Length: 208
Image 1 (cartoon, rainbow, N blue to C red):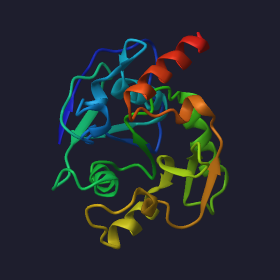
Image 2 (cartoon, rainbow, N blue to C red):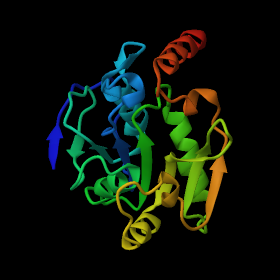
Image 3 (cartoon, rainbow, N blue to C red):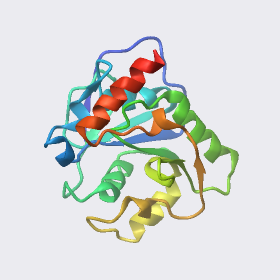
C-alpha cells in the first residue's frame, strides 16, 4: 500500500471516527473516450479530489482503489486489486483490506458534485438504526446506488466470504438489510460521458 501526501485545504481537521472511505478510481473510462475520469476537472478540481474532499471531514481513513495519482488531499492510501479491471466488487473488497473502520463508505470517483453533507446523511441513517447493514443513495431510476453508500464492515466481509469473482454486479454489495436516502440530483450526478461533465459544470455554476 502506498500513501501520497497532498497539500492541506483549510482548517478541516479529521475528527476521531470509525468510518473509512473507499473511492473506486480504476475504471477504464470507455464512455469518456478512454480518458482518466479521476483526473477530469469540475470547478477547477479533479473528480477524485472532489470525492475525497467530501469524505475527508467524516473519515479517519481515505483509500483509493486504482493507479496512484496526484491528489491535493492529504493522508490518502492508494491500493490495487490483485487483478485490476475485475469491476467494482473486487475493487471495494481490495479497499476494505486496507481499512480498519467499522463503517465504510463506498464511493465512485465520478460523483462530481458530492458534498460532505450528503455523506453525513448516509452515515447518520446507518448509525441511527443498528439493525441496518447498509444505507445507499437513490439514483435517478430510482434505485439504490451501491457506490454511493455506507456499509457496516461485517456485511462487506460477508460479501467477501461469498467469493465474488470479476464482473460481479455492484448490487451484490447491498446484502443484508438496506435502506435508501434521497440525496438529490447534485449528490448523485455522475460523469460517464462528455455530456455529463458539461451538466456537472452547469449545475455547479447554478449553485454558486
